[in-house]
Image 1 (tube, rainbow, N blue to C red):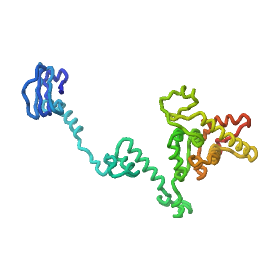
Image 2: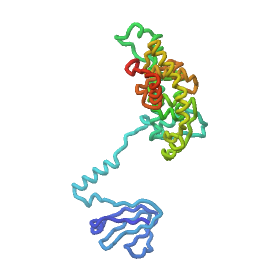
Image 3: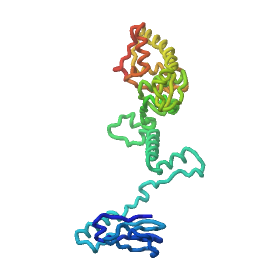
Length: 332
């Protein structure tokens, strides 16, 4: 049942309603009448009616504003509203992608799954935009650009221009390494698909720790105090046993000892990126993106190298040895 109502002025003035129905019954508040109107009916409210009740199969009822009952000013307003509401649309055919999902009946492959996301709307379109940008970065060569007057002789050489690729910087936070996304980052470093990596300290230590021990799935709602009493640490919904950090300490302290000795005897100058490269070399584990970055000569930058468990290890190492110096102003 749809009840048509209005304000006091409408009740007094007897507002006209246009009612689109199949069948309906109307009443002034008493029992329903027996009369069945045609498919389209006009009802008139008078001042004594409390409401007009419409019993219908469907669909829409709304006030009908009759332009001829208004003055010139009101009519102009109504015409303006109508011109806005019913304004002709500009055709988007051929200029914008149509919204359409993937048809799984055609079989599944990466292209068929990912390409339709561009026309799926909402955030899915942003993924397609990102894929297109990444593909442009991978495909770009200096030879795609015109030779300009300020190009050097080498830069004018077609062979050289074809060899110059886009330099790709990959940046990420530590939680991605704690999660399974680490394996994707490892793949990128393994296949030289990035040229420079920038990350946080957690992005360094978590890669090493996951080579030494496993990380487990928990739940976001697990209470930190209760976990701590059991020697467990929570990263989002990931659980890292304290034993993992103990294994990390046992592994890294001897390496710091070696680096400290090289600092004393060979005057080695350690920077964050050189320390990270050394750790990538020492871990010698193909599941580590740091190991592949070292093998493929991909620099990994992390100026705030002490901001994490790695900083704790450096601090603990400083007591018996006097300190391993890492210069954050050099080589970064």
